[in-house]
Length: 373
Image (cartoon, rainbow, N blue to C red; front, top):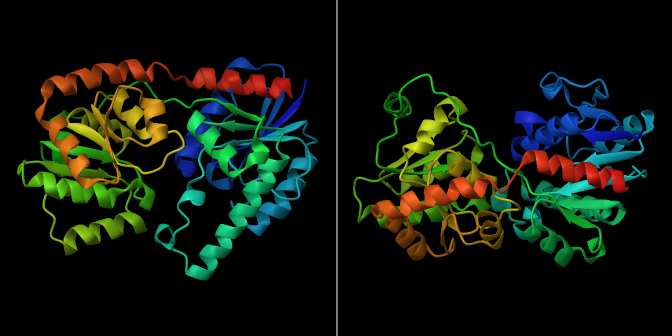
């Protein structure tokens, strides 16, 4: 029996995609491992969100914010207190002074590829200080980790390219998406009316960080609008600094047909997916690319950028375009809107594609990594 710690401060909704990964990892480890003792470290924000279902899983309060000096100083102290044989950090932010055995999961190297002031609300001095700290912490974590888990072959290759010292200790465990639909409390048409969504429409669900390329999507949509005047573009996401900048641009340039419904809960979102002409994913960089898979699970045909990771994860189940070419994006969006046979074929392939990924398998493969250490 081993004592295994999991840094779950990102657990659940507070951690967005990373939170989903951490939550699904723990849920599936609970189902398959009755031998090892697990200590799940959480912040106050998500402490009650996780309730252990097995007696060999214990939760511990570690209320230290990510990327802070408090994290660097206090996390090693609390981890040492529980005399752990192994710690899994589901992110790169491993405390520099933690010197016992650990594995890390690296989802992407976005900050390496997009070190831009456009991607932050910090002033330039603090941004570059944070960026240099990031580089230091991730290099240290990669060098010291026993094993590194990557969520795609693309991410594995990307890590090895930028950090040659990682070669030989990276293993790939794919993420997955939920394959069930929520039961809506209202009819689909009423749900659309509630959020001011007008059919026909193209859909994007996700955040508005610069690498997501929503500026490029809006420019391509503006061109497409000249051909299909009735078409709308629905951008679903919680209002934040980045969505505010996108909204300001749409207003400033008087771009018609762009709808910002804000955050939509899952019980309503399924109907929004299903009623769309297509889900469009223009991202310029992803480590795994979960949103298009989630759209496929909800019955939406998908048009995606042809970034290498997306081709790996989506296979032939999406219509691909060059995310840096507005003309190509416009042409592919036009095609998917006007070709009903193509949409039906993509929906069918999408359902087949999501079946290739499983959170259960991800948990089993991760446990195998623990055992081999």
